[in-house]
Amino acid sequence: MDLDSLSRKLESRESFPSLPEVLSDVIHEIDAENISMESLARMIQKDVSFSAQLVRQANSGMYADAGRVSTVVQAVRLLGFRMLKGFCLTLPIFSRYRNLSGITELWYHSRVASVCAGIVSGHVSGVEKDEAETAGLLHDLGKVFLVLEMHAFTNDHLQTADDPLRSPDWKAETDILGINHCFIGARYGRMFNFPGSILDPILWHHEPGKAIHNKELTHVCCLGDQIATIVGAMHPDFMFVEPVILHSLDYLGIRPERFSSILNDCLEVVSRISTID
Ligand SMILES: [Fe+2]
Ligand SMILES: [Fe+2]
Image 1 (cartoon, rainbow, N blue to C red):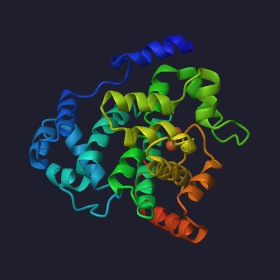
Image 2 (cartoon, rainbow, N blue to C red; image 1 turned 135 degrees about the vertical axis):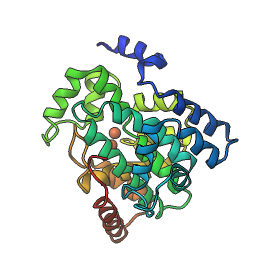
Image 3 (cartoon, rainbow, N blue to C red; image 1 turned 60 degrees about the horizontal axis):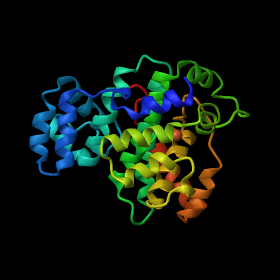
Image 4 (tube, rainbow, N blue to C red; image 1 turned 90 degrees about the vertical axis):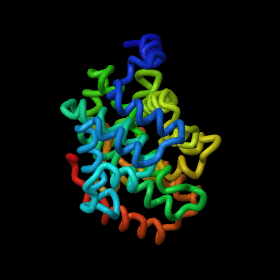
């Protein structure tokens, strides 16, 4: 597919994986900001499969209350509106395509990046934890579109993921396709009315210096992404830490001792997260 046809595909909402109707309604209600968590939980329960997945995620070790969530309403209260919307957009898609190459690994990477971004946010003023976690969860969603639409390209990159001489995923995408997963993910996020604060980290998580608004959150997301690789939740199509991590640490004023304590906290949580949930 050439750049023109790829761009045309991206113009249409139908090109993106569709969501179950109940979840589109849930997202609509969250956006309208006029619904209680209890009413949202009742809506979600109409989708039995998503309800079970949501409770499992709330118990997955990503959160302090792991193992103690048994109902949808408890899960909704634990996650909050922003992360709930993030899970509405990611869980059904990653679950539907989990048999495609690289998708299970990408889902694990996204969940770990979410937790790591949340931990980093605790060391940065002005960045809310659930905002950082949502950005981490969604940051690579554009890759799903590439897996679905550009099989040959993504398969090649899965084969050479451990080649240290290869360009990072996002650079290779830009060089070969003229577009990358960051741009695609931000477009997807815009279709679902995510605010600019979340779109910036999706768009610039590999080049945080280019973010114009939400710079802190973008650097936090960049660190969450790179730390996920350090702690073993690598991208399925590129397995190395990028030098940009130094830029984000410097921008956020995180010194080596603090970074090592962040890494310990991330390792501790990640050891509780299953690779296949
Ligand atoms: Fe990425
Ligand atoms: Fe990533």
